[in-house]
Length: 294
Image (cartoon, rainbow, N blue to C red; front, top):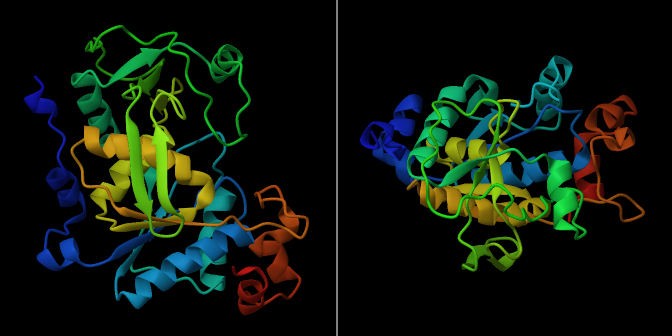
């Protein structure tokens, strides 16, 4: 049974027909916008740095639209992604690929994790976890799961599909982890202390970000992930998934977050600094790069 669920990087690579030796050893970067709103300058500058690092290494740049959440991703934002990226001067070599069309790959990964007892079903809502955790946490950071639904031993849940429940990855409590980030330097964290069991599949039948991004970056043979520093903690979760799925992890390069004049981190709700708004005002892409570049 487990052999049938065997999850391998070779199978994922075949989905993209990039088995030639050159693609395996050359630099491959990616742009991964999420169409939950209009892109702001922070996104654009991160993508610009990703493109620069790729071009200086004569690599391949992949565009992947992370549109898994049907409640937040809208068609108008999907269409705006391509227009805004192009206006800003971004050019990609492969794609666009849509995560919403890649569910079979995520489901295969879920089956592998379930079949090896690495994940477990959970009835807890985010509110339940927040209330049980009892400790403050950053707005964009998962509170540490208190283990309400966590089974005592490594058990294999009897489930053919993930529908109707949250599914959490069981982190190795107490394991000291570290990785060398190419932008932010050496990063350390202790599993179960600084982050806990995390969701890989949501009860509304949507693959979670942590699982989808690992599966896609492995399948697309991404060699370096360039993104904002707000995702540094998520890297530890993703490294655990790479290891669990027996996939090679890419390098990571996290950039300082872009802030407004008051020092506040930019968000999609800050329409005044969206690429679309700045373009209407007559601001040129090079002006944005000069104004906000770190």
